[in-house]
Structure formats: C-alpha cells, structure tokens
Image 1 (cartoon, rainbow, N blue to C red):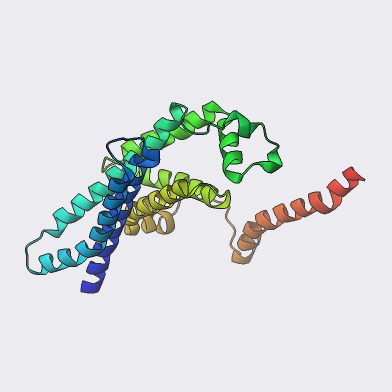
Image 2: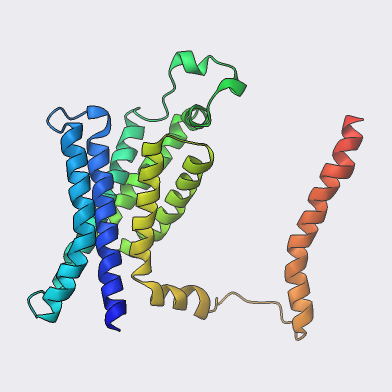
Length: 252
C-alpha cells in the first residue's frame, strides 16, 4: 500500500510539474514578455522539472515523520494543476477570439495546396470560418473556468479531454510545430489526470449503471448480438459497394 501511496504522490508531482512547465513556456513564447527572457524561462522550466522529481521523496519522508499533512499537499498540487491548465487553455481561447490564431500570411496562403505544410493547411482550414473559431474559443474559455469549481470539475474535464485529445491528434498527424504539440500533450495528460481522480465513480457511471431507455425484448442472446454486429457490418458492406461497384460505374 505504501508503494501505491508513493506512486500517487510521484504522479501528482510530475503532472503538476508538467503543467507548470507548459505555463512557463506559453508565457515565454517568442519572447513576448521582455521582462521574462528565454534564460529565465528555461531556468524555471529546469527547476520545475527537478522539483517535480525530488519533492515526492521529501513529501513521503515528511509524511512518515508526521511533519506534512498530505491532504493539504494534495489540495495545493491539484490547485496548481487546475489553474495552470485553465490559464493555458483560456489563453489559447482568447487568442482565437482576438485573431492571434488560425492566421495564415498571404504569401503562404497564395501557394498551391500541394506545396503547403500540414501546419499551414490546418490553420488555413480552421481559419476559414471565424464563427467556428469562436466556438472552439468558447469551449476552451468556459471549460477552463469550470475546471476551477469542484462541482463542475469532472464535467469540464471530460468535455475538455475530448476536445484536447482531438487537438493533440491533429498536432501529431498534421505535424504542427513542437511548441503546439508539447502544449497539447501536456494539457491532455493533465486533464486525464484530473479525470482519473474520480476513476471509481466513472467506472460505476459508464459501465455499471444501466440506461432507463426502453429496449426491444429478445430472449435469444445470439440474435441480440447478431443484430448489434449487423449495424456495423452492413455499414461496411454499403461502403464497399460504393467504392468497388457504384463509383467505378459512375466513372466509366
């Protein structure tokens, strides 16, 4: 059990360290803050990383000697994780609203599509509709705000996890810049960690409780499963028909 308790401390510290690093990187991005030069940014990044590795051992020892109240330490670290994630996500949201994201320079936008990088194609696509960008921004800003309340934390984290997982996959497969990829990976990990704190309740909600929706009564379990599977396989057959029969006939 003690090993499990230490592992929880270690993971919590690592996640808090990573989200703090993400915050430092976004503040130091492109040297936008003159009083926060790169040398200060990366010095603090290094210190945050080292502290996240060393502190769990200090914490464990302090707890054994009854010098630290773990409940308060957890509360403090959870607050760091929630507030750093909220700041970063809200920053990206506000940037979208004020036209600092999804902006493609004219000299790049004028190039043929097959000469564009995945990053610029992605930004051009999302930037084509300002309204869609506003929707994304509102999800980030409102979701970030709701992370800061215990009553809405879990609902906000689940919604933001779906959002960030999608964004992280876009950043990976469309080869976005290292900074954007790093931010999306860290924020996704941080949100997943917050969700994991309610693991038992989520397992019960999603996998134990049954819906009250009325069901078609079939006594034969084989027929039930066959009907479920048919919804997927018939969709596959329809797709194969379109690809190998219908479209070749249309093109011939």
